[in-house]
Amino acid sequence: MSISEFDNITTPSNVTSTSCIEAIVIPLALYIHIPWCVKKCPYCDFNSHELGADVQLSMYDEYVDTLLLDAQMQQPLTQGRQISSIFIGGGTPSLLPIVQYQRLFAGLRACFEFADDIEVTMEANPGTLEHAPFAEYLKVGINRLSIGVQSFAADKLQTLGRIHDPKQATAAIHAARAAGFERVNVDLMHGLPQQSLSEALYDIQTAHDAGATHISWYQLTIEPNTVFYRSQPILPDEDSLADIEDAGQALLQRLGYDNYEVSAWAGESDKPCRHNVNYWQFGDYLAIGAGAHGKITINDGSLDNSVSGLSKDNETLLEAGIYRFSKSRSPKDYMTYQDTPKMVNWLPIADDELVSEFMLNALRLHEGVTWSLFESRTGLSYESIALQVNKLVEQGLLMNNTELLQPTLLGRRYLNQILHAFL
Image (cartoon, rainbow, N blue to C red; front, side, top):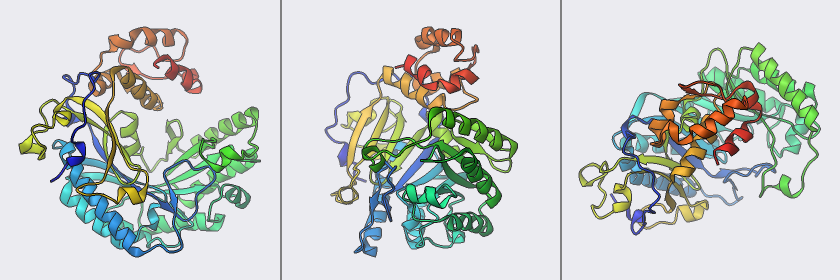
């Protein structure tokens, strides 16, 4: 197995000490990126690329070949761990033909050990007519769908540049449930241009009535490098946004959904998304695909010839630390390789960055995380940030709890202020 792309990478001196971190007990997930879509939405800043009219099926063959090479290259980074969850994002993953998913999952199972209860989520676009019958996805092992509806109002869908209409959206949810999917998330946006309170509530109720078991309900934000950033639409004012948020949360609660994270609501028959919770709890995740980002913890000496196939003189990977890495954003560049797909970055996370990155994720969880998790995932001690924590407790933004890191109700509203304290 070749891992030549890691050669000649130097390790900065500010790698955090991970002597107290046991990588083997940190959950390990896998992210897969499918970079193509039919049409780029004006609000989207994800790594997505419109399919040309002259697309060839051979492109999908080449891309899946590259994904499997990428997976093989990263296999040593599991350090003996099972894959507990997989998330297939995009772009529009449902554009990839089912035969390619069959090939992909056969290869992944040969490369990795899947947990018996593995959660496998795929994003799906209700306007993508090319997707296979939902039952076919179940057969390859995908057991959770996340359907990008965004709104059930025709005019809002048109403004957002979506290629589906309200009927297609409800039909996709019905079809997924009828095919046997017990877990179906529906993505909804609020705070849309000229959106009224009643329209926002209608979207929630419609998703629930159609069969959603989980709802991701988040506010539209204008991101750089998007069409909306260059030509900004008129959004509801702050008072209207607050009214929508308060009324929407109240409706979701009445419908039996649990708000376990800022924008995530699990229904009574469902549970939190394991893959996303792993992100928020600062777990590890491998990443394959154009523009995919990963994070991995490495214990000193855990990667040697007998375990990983790494060269003994590759001191970068043998150095203990917590690392982030990414892949080339361009699908063409990603698929242009010699031995393995290109690694754009392989960088350690320094101690000061570890604190801010952990907090950025963990404080999104309304029930918080234990302080022991902070120490076990970062290798840092509670005492290293005790001063900031005490100030936030005094300000009423964090709970006064020696065992749990948890924002108060006020802290949830002023989450950015809490995060700023750890920068």
